[in-house]
Amino acid sequence: MKNAIEVLKTTERIILSFPFLFLSAAIVVNVVMRKVFAANIFWLEEFSRYIFVFSTFLGASIAVTMNKHPKMSALQDVIGKKRAAWLILFSDIICTGISAYLCVYAVTQVMNLIRLQTITSAMSMPLWIVYVIIPISMIGMVIRFFLLIMRDINTVLGKGEKS
Image 1 (spheres, rainbow, N blue to C red):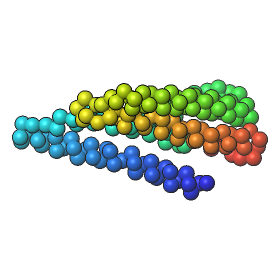
Image 2: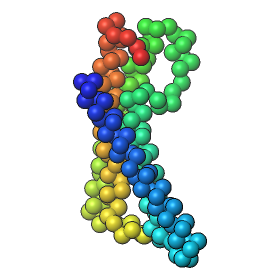
Image 3: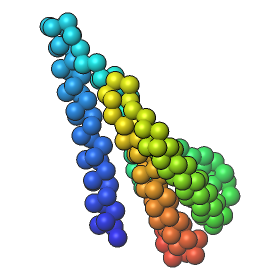
Image 4: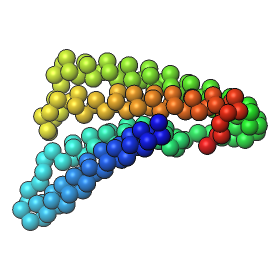
C-alpha cells in the first residue's frame, strides 16, 4: 500500500512539474520574441491561468497526503490526545464528505461544459479539458481522506501512531 502511495505521489509531482517547465520556457521565448521581433505568443496568458488552475487543484490533492492543509490546532492542544484523535477523525470525515460533494458538483459542471461545447477564448480548445482536473483532484482528495480516516480509526483505537 505504501509503495502504491509513493508511486502516486511521484507521478503527481512529475505531472505537476511538466506544465511549469513548459510555461517557463514559453515565457522566455515570448520575452525574446517581444524584444527582438515585436511579436508575442497571444495564447500564453490564458495558458498560464489554466496551468495555475491545474496546479492548484492537483496540489490540493497532494497536500492531503502530506497533511499540509491549513488547520487550527489550538483546540487539539487543549483537549488532550485521546479527544484530539476523535476530533481529527471527525474533521477528516467531514472533509471527505465535502470533497465528495464537490467532486459530484464538479463532474456536473464539466458535463455542462461538454454539453454546451464551450471553448477557450485564445486557445480555442474545449473548456472542459481545462476544468476536468477539478473532479480528478476531488477524487484524489476523497481517496486520501479515506486513507487518513483509516489511520485515524487506528489512532483512536490505540492501534497506530498519530503522524
